[in-house]
Length: 392
Image 1 (cartoon, helix red, strand yellow):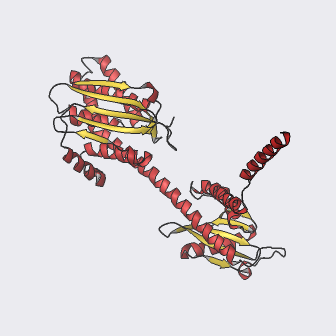
Image 2: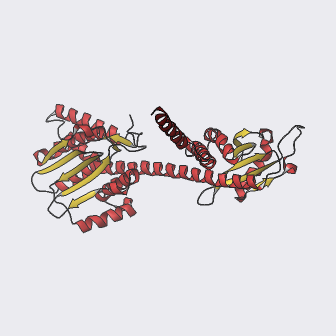
Image 3: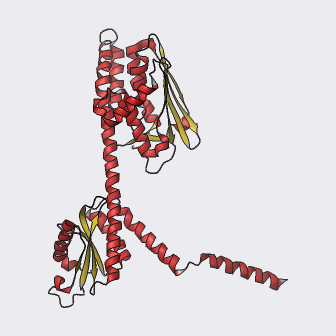
């Protein structure tokens, strides 16, 4: 009985031990992927002396060279291992490689120096090229012997991979610039269409109701402060709704009882992060293009519901609506040339594009409308999404 139990325990222990043992190939694969991941993180921030200094040690491990440097046409950005005293020669060779966009192998004759004990005998210089073939920097693999074919191939492949990481960094930067440009486009839309009407409405109360005029000025100031803030691509639903409330306070001063508003917001979705100025253009479109053209009173409804891992938001009005075919054509034209559009479609197209670029194509706007039937615009926002965080 005891011996049988002991055998069973021994078998379990051996089984668990086997599960923990990786083959040499698996271990090598893991080491390469792990090292590549460590090098990728600083490279994805763009190539600067600081990011190069963080990446070169890991790149040297990938190449397996005695030394490794990253250089542009004027200087060594960073170096790890041997070869620092050959900086001038390496920079000159790197500049030629970058201009020609072709790799170069240097021998001992090209790397002579006055040091008797110099261990450097060669180097492989490979351009860091992007998808368009351009190169702004080079990888320099330094050898303590004539560079062997294996080192040459490792340097070329690592340079190609590093160039792809820098291309992704440039793509991320381009997306950020595009997002800022899109926000500026929305701000430009707000300026002519709302500010004049807001000031006119405030001016109408200056003599008849100075206290009301003062309150409206404060609301207007807070609204513009939020809309034209200089930082942050994201905000919270609570902040966006607070700004919308100020906007509607001013619009109600213009329209009086003609503008009725209904809010239905689930408290648990208030902290959800979403693109800055994501809801306000939809509300402005509902008031300006839907309700202002409707005879008599109109209702604007804003709802935000908790839908598990997502937040479901709708902006709906019972205004004049529009022909869905005309709307689709207008959105397409706005996406192609937003400068020439009148404004309504710019807001919808802009918000739709920003939602899709941040969260994915499945999170674009859904618009339901018809002539005389009002308009309902819906969106889904993930409660949690990588890299999406509201600014303080």
